[in-house]
Every structure is written in C-alpha cells, then in structure tokens.
Amino acid sequence: MANQGPVIWWIRRDLRLRDNPALAQAIALAKGAGVIPVYILDPLDMAMGAAPQLRLGLGLGKFAETLKACGSKLVLRRGSALAVLKEICTEVGAQAVVWSRAYDPDAIARDSEVKAALKDLGIEAKSTGGRVLFEPWTVATGAGGMFKVYTPFWKAVRECDPGGVLAAPSALPRPGQWPATLELEELGLGRAMNRGADIVAAHCHVGEDAAQARLDQFLERAVIAYKTDRDAPAVQGCSGLSENLAWGEISPHRIWHAGMAVWHTGMAQAGAETFLKELCWREFAYHLMYHSPQILTRNWRPQWDAFPWEAEPNPQVLTWQQGRTGYTLVDAAMRELYVTGRMHNRARMVVASFLCKHLMIHWKLGMRWFEDCLVDWDPAANAMGWQWVAGSGPDAAPFFRIFNPDTQAQTHDPQRAYRDLWLAEGKRAPSPQALSFFDAVPRHWALRPDMGPALPVVDLKVGRARALEAHAALKSQSAG
Image (cartoon, rainbow, N blue to C red; front, side, top):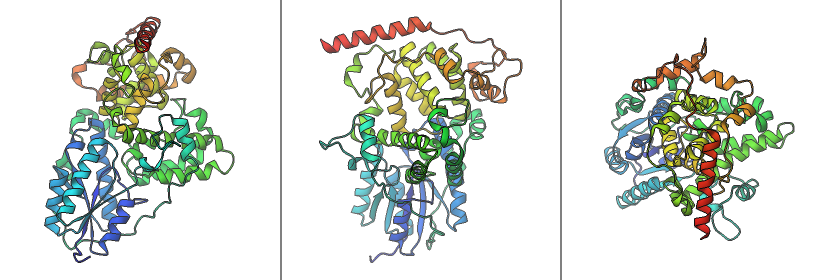
C-alpha cells in the first residue's frame, strides 16, 4: 500500500484489548505506522438512555487508562461519525478505518454510509466481527431461513466453532501525530442521571479486568449451582457479565470457550450448559434483530397490533416505575433497577408480566423505561425480552402464562431476603441499599422511606381475568 499513514480504530461497544478482532485488524493494516483509538459520541449514542450513557462514560474512562498503560491514548470526539472520521483522516493522513460490526438497523445504515464515503475518498474501510459468536447471516435453518424459535437455534450452534480467542497486544503502535481530543467530561455522559449518578456508578464493575475476574469467579464457584440459583434473586448465583458484554469489555468468544471447558469436565456440567444456553439466548436476540429489525419498534407478530394495551403513560405506569405497586417482589425489583442499573433475571420477567398483563400496559413503555435505567442495556436483548414476556414476539411465552408476583415471591424469595434488601417502607431499620433508592430518585417524586407500604394498584385476580379476556378476544378476532 502506497500510503503508510496511521489506521483509525473506531471504537464502539468493544472496550477491550483482549480478543478484539477490530484492534487486531487495525494493527495488521498499520504495519507499524500507528493505530489511533477513536471514540465518537454520535447521534445514535446521544439518543441512549441516562443509565447506559453513564455506564458508557465509566467504560470509556477505564479504557482510556488501559490504553495509556499500553503507550497509547483514547481520542474522544462528538458529532456525526462520518464527518468526524473524515476530519481525523485528513488531520493525520490516515490510510484506513477499522471497526467492529453492529447489527441494529440504524447502526447498519450509519456504518454503510461511512464505509462507502471513506472508500470514495481512497481510505480503506473495514468492519470485523467480535460482538457476537456467529455472524447472523451464517446461522440458518435447514430451509435456509432465519430461526424463529430458540431451541432449534441452540441445537444448530452448540456444536459449532465460533473461532478462537485473540491475545491482547502488548503495545499499540503509536502514530507520528495525535489528533485533537475532547476531555471525557466534555461529553457529559453522566449528566442525565442527575443525583443518581454516583449511586448507580458505585454498583458497576467496569473494565475488562473486572469482567475477566467476574467470569473466573463465576466458573470457579457459582456455576455448579447456576441451574437453580439463577432463579433466586437474593442469591449471588449469576455471572453479572451482561453489564460487561453490553459494552464489549469481554468478548462472547472468551465466555463461550471458558464455559465449554467447564461443561465438558465434570461436576458443573448442568450449570455450565444452562449458562451457555443463556449466552446463546443473547445470540438469538441478535439473530432476530438482524433478520427482523421490526422487533425493536413494533409487535413482532402483527396480529398483536389489535391487542388493547394502554400505550400512553398513566398513573399506574408511574407506580410501577417508582416501585409502589403494592406487590413486594415487583417493587423490590424496580428499586434494585433504579439503584444499581441492573435487575435480576427472574425479577425482570415478573415485573414485565405485571406491567403488560395485570396492568395491560404496552410493552413498549416498559422497554423504554429499561432502556433509560439499565447499565447493561442492549437493544436486541431488551426488545426480545419484553416481547417474549408480552406474548407478541418470536418464541414467546404463552400469553396465559401470567406471573403471579405473590406466588413468585413465595417460591423464589421465601425468606424475604431480596425484598427486605430493597424495600424500606414499614421497616424499623431499612438496609442501606433500600435507603439509597430515596437518594437516587427525582425529588419531584416526593418519596420518603417513612411512607407507609403502598396499597395494591390492581387486584391480581381482576387483572388476570381482564388480560385473559382481552387475549381471548384477540384470538377470536384473528381466527375470524
């Protein structure tokens, strides 16, 4: 290649050095001429919710430290991705730009425009894998189409080789000159969190070292009982890796190979298999999003467009958001979400079912709240999860499977450990976690720990009957 300028490594949700195909490609193309790591806060990232933006900022800060230790630095910019990349390429005489692929429709459109424009300018533009185990177009049914049901998808990929794990480079080649950069604070990524920022940040495990430690600890201790403990919200039975996967601080390939090694070696086989299935559940979400992107914005099953969900915010939605529904498992889970930016998986199903079925609120309102509050927010997993519970998505739970929050509490939190951890009202000595909720929430909510316990926002039997009646009417209408 005649032009031996530096290579721009356009960083998105891949904040790691280990097992990063885009970084490896950038180093190979640079041939010693220098690699410039660049993150651009573009309109797509600006549109993210408050908690995802906060967590992105924490991840960028930690990754900047990692790059500095390797003799490199993180360049930060704001604006249109294409405009910024063209500016930097001109500024440093870059020969190529490399990035890891995204699979949502808006990112695909942006990246396609960037790739075409850069090539027109004579700048090499390459995208790589790394965010998923299997590129969505490489997994197909026997008839050559997309999978719409998870179990056949799992059976199709469980014996496949997703490829190996790349080692981290010991150092990144430095360019002859560095482009101008903003300071991280100038991006304002935690601003929308207001007074809750420090509270949520304290519960985050940031960076690839933290992610690797989480994986190691889980596979050494918790995986053996994962099949059962994953349903107990008071037990530290899950890996917690969804947060790090969401920001690319660990690759799915690294998790896959580590989990496979345990699956094939004895006592923890059942737990390891269940864990790998959960990793592939995430993979299935990306498969669906790529092949049927409407899952992000509307009912995946069009017949559900006629279902009489309430589609506008109302006082019941607010009680759900505040954890004041009067059902302790739902309320504890919503408090956990607001304080930590995460929610236990069993609890996610319960609160989603309660909103969509007992309250008959549209799943989109719940999905958007999660998008604003989750530090492990992932567009594919969030949309699929909500549509799965609501009954409107592929491979969905039957609508008549309506989680009773009281029964779920008795089954999965029989000693009230989870609920007591997160609920302060009515307690003589609430836990620090329960009290921190009141320090994090907006002041205009006017919530206090000395308030009395909330009254039930709906009678469970009445809510269930109403939901089933609406579902029966939908089925009758569809049949007619």
